[in-house]
Length: 452
Ligand code: ADP
Ligand code: MG
Image 1 (cartoon, helix red, strand yellow):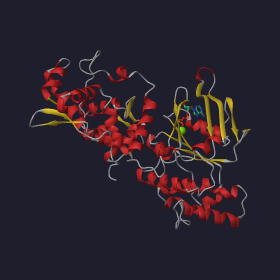
Image 2 (tube, rainbow, N blue to C red; image 1 turned 135 degrees about the horizontal axis):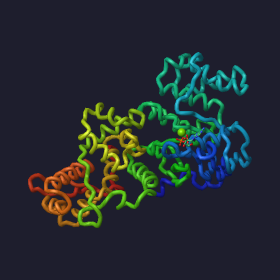
Image 3 (tube, rainbow, N blue to C red; image 1 turned 90 degrees about the vertical axis):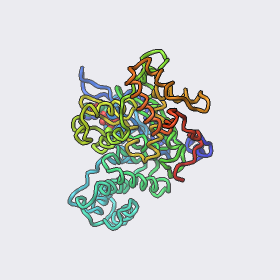
Image 4 (cartoon, protein in one colour; image 1 turned 135 degrees about the vertical axis):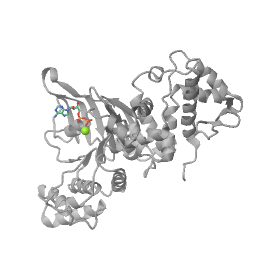
């Protein structure tokens, strides 16, 4: 990675005394046989100036860890230190913003923000001034006298942010603060928070945010702490050194997303077990599911907009596909790591969510990174790479595939591979010569940023 990107404050940060230290924290719920380990010996250090993101699947203990850090729950083992002191009871220097903020319906926007200050005993005059300034900062100027029911979800969440920031917490904790919002509101609120944070317009010393969205993590964090479940534990920590404001279309950004994904996916099975093998290699040749790419994108969009989980049968109706058409699409989504089937439901993965929310170019990039790992695609690509002029007749591939498949199926396999390869701009098919050829793109890393 470009070293000029990684200079920002790195030295200073590592010298600063920690704001927060989580030491060997374990958390059990329940008793006897029912007892479950929600957190297993978690360690975490947050220093002033850092924006740290906890990333991991549902149930890995992210919310539990936030509650322990803010003192709303006690660890079963281990301890939390705040500015070097062992935390006892609720941490007065930390505030949490939840997924959907409970506002007082009978109070105006201003009333809701002031309520937080009132609870801290701040005099009326100062309350008013601070509330108005914050309402302005989060972009709600003009809505001071509106009631929650008059606001969109995104605007209500802004009130939630203003209320949390009103008490000027040193440590701002955010628990999936954007996940209940529509894509556009979420994106604009992320942008506003990052502006406040990077411009140091709020006195907050550090932010700890929970998410299961990889792109969101890479967009905002200085450091990503990756967690996994059963039991909840920390898998890895990754620094994100890209300068702000970050662009999702930037190749460095896309690489980082992929790196995070690899960290999450990499600890499962060896690749050949997970993915099967290519023609001519030992093991069973993996069949490509015949999934039209438009249907794959549509599937992921529908699941994402349903909140990340959808019933398989309801999905078929929404996409106007019968089960025979739907199944290969689901299989493709699973194989590429975009979704997982779970008892009659299909659940989107962080990568699938990134794909669903991405623009055309970022989608192609995510897709390209993923299908490179699919054995048949990898085999076609490397075979073409070694061929003279990076071209070979279709026949070469068909004959090899016919070792493993019937003649008809071999043809269908190649057709699907070509349509995927074409979308990913890896390779394409020349109709006149009946030849496959490599798309001669510049290597990804030195590609000029698409769209300027
Ligand atoms: P996440 O926020 O990462 O989705 P949680 O911290 O909510 O995960 O939950 C972690 C695990 O602990 C899950 O298995 C959950 O069912 C369990 N859990 C969380 N809170 C409680 C509770 N109060 N009682 C029993 N189990 C709980
Ligand atoms: Mg949670």
